Image (tube, rainbow, N blue to C red):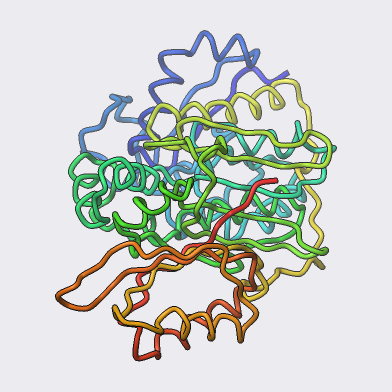
Length: 432
């Protein structure tokens, strides 16, 4: 049996500091769980002299990655740097040196996860990444273990706390996107450059990871259709509520006729569905399977302590195996022949908000375009009038239609003389 387990930290930011603090403060508890002491043997940072939330011995800090990666006392490398490079290089190097890895890096795992896991399997080491998707809310381990007997049918996720906070405030206060974003930045919920969050990039990384694990197929972030929340306005939330819906930035993956469709975009969600009630910075992932039915995982998706919880859980998992000299089985086998279904083939219902001229015959012209493309209307409501400008706003709800037909219809409608602008198009997500 191994007498102790050595940890090498790559990065000592908010989460890195949290991991160091927990290993120090809960050392006896972790030792009891593992069966041997667990200790930090090296910490890679950019600036050794910088003040940090956890005061580790100065001898542990280095700016040279090789001091950690090649340290014979380091058994597990914990990568908490973020970004694709140099994090990917360090992870691959650690694996090549026969060291186990724990990472919270969603971008690296979305783009390179299957290759990293294959490399790890050849070297007989583990790479665990629970914190990469939903922070402190367990979802990776359940997909790899608890639901392994199931065929996953659909995945619906609210997996970006920043955007969920913004959409919640817009729904509750009727505010527009720009105003709420500014408030979120002032409160520290949104970055000074919020692009990754508000354009759905972060959620696409996470959905690629979930889809790869859930469907046992190689899915990268480039396969995910992505649309952000910047076009949403207070009016959309007002109308959605009247129609019985909430608006959420959903990460959606589904099996459709033997193929996989993966997409991230705002969606109207029936307000009676559980995931519609997930508000603020919280995350939720609903997995629908053939055996277990619908299972909802709900909790904090970010923050130093929730993410630290997931990282330390992975550390304990690997450390137990090290102490007992157990070689863990490779986590998954992938099918590489599953087709990624293009967004143009999506079939769903749609919400359309149009600003039109206030005069007779407007509806007829719009309905003619829609009818020509096989799109039928479930309801049509005139919502706002500007008599002085002779303008009106109408909201259309369609029956199920094909994405390619809807996009062509919008193109043709926008060219009509009676249409001033396309206010918004939001897909409606249905629950059985």
